[in-house]
Amino acid sequence: MHRSSFVVVACAAAALGSASCGGADTDGDNGPGTSPQFSVDSQGGVFTAGDGFKIEVPPGAVSAATDLTIEHVEDTREGAVGPMYLLGPEGQTFDKPVTLTLPITVALEAELGENTFLDARGFTAPKGSEDFTPLSRHEVTDAGLVTETTHFSNFYAGMVSPTVLANQHYFPKAIAADDAYIYFASGGTEENAPADSNDGFIYRVKTGTAEAEAITPADPDPTALWVNDSDVYWASGGDNDPVIPSAIRRVNKASLEVETLVEVGYLLSLIGDESAIYFGDGDGHNIYKLALDGSDGGEPVVLAADAGKPEHLAQDAENIYWTGGKATNKVYKVAKSGGEVTVLAENEAEPTGIAVDAEFVYWGNAGDGGVFKAPIAGGEKTLIHQGGSMAGLAIRGSTLFSTDMSRNRSVNAHDLGGNTTVVLALGQHFAWRVIAPEGQDVFWVNGGDYRFEGQIVSYQAP
Image (cartoon, rainbow, N blue to C red; front, side, top):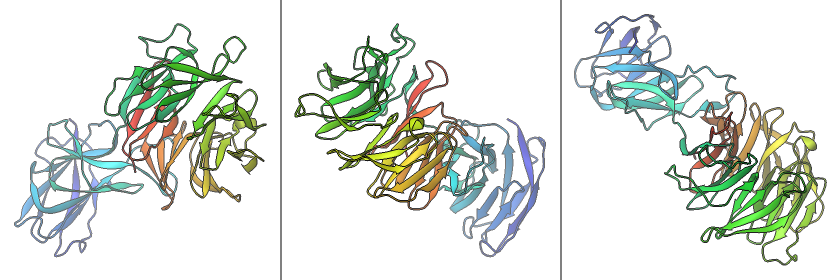
């Protein structure tokens, strides 16, 4: 374990905040027992290091004069966004919480934009232990993390790693959820991948586990998912040729019986409600509707033609929304009952993921990395976030989630009310789709850079 000691000016104050301290960082390994000691008494005090690390001891935290030490530990922790500090004496406790400011020094591929912060937490563990746990307080700026402790041990600022629900899958893409399972489509794992590399399975996995099970036979290129109470529906991409046509299929959750509902085009997207399913055809550039009760004779109805490459869909009670991709660079809506198509935005840079709430439609662009919103009723667009190459979007309450396939390869949470963005995860391997079911975690798909590197992950987020 490599350590550096700080030469720090120590200030004891009659009241917290009345001291002004500064110091310089001394490089090198000074060895055990050479850490500077700082005396603090019942009046409290503030101690600041040159790298931004700070200890604020409030009045009444200790009852008598106490010597404190700081060591800068050079070991790197997984998820760390700043250095580790060993504060001593090891095991020292305080009658009132001591405030720590831990500097964030992680080197990002692109600088965080205005009002954008990392979802960093303070972590602590006893000396010599690998059992680090997060501290409850975390107030983050672009330069540091403010947290609290009532004891001294090891501390560092880091990000919580997503929980892996399914691992080592062949380019998983689609994802959906109900109250019991997360469903996803992938080409399988190295152990069960079909001989035809175009084929894949529909899987389900319970949250809190990592044992995904295939619930369908091998199927050509499953690309999109939607679930209701009884069934899982998916868009079977086929081979984009007449030999193996694209289709909408469903599997019953209880019996696991598979049924083909319709064969049409080259299907890219799928969504549904209580009465119908809606899907996008990348060949015919159509948006289709298929009634679940068979009232249309079991045949799909074209809701919108000239729809571009409708790979991403969203809905509210009245309308279907989609992005046309680079085929049209437009964002659209059409009534579920049919009628005229409305263009909500045009001249976009390869629009991808889309979401909607009661007032606005939201979309991300792969080309220019922007995340935008525009009124559903029509009007000017507004930039929410500047990323690198956006992919998936999902909305829950006043939080919009997005995935960015370039720059820091991040997953983000945008507070629409507070106009801030929190980066939930960095270094994700080609994050494609994200979902945010009510009352659950946020889930996303990491496609992986290479075969059998794909993951389905979950993350606790607002």
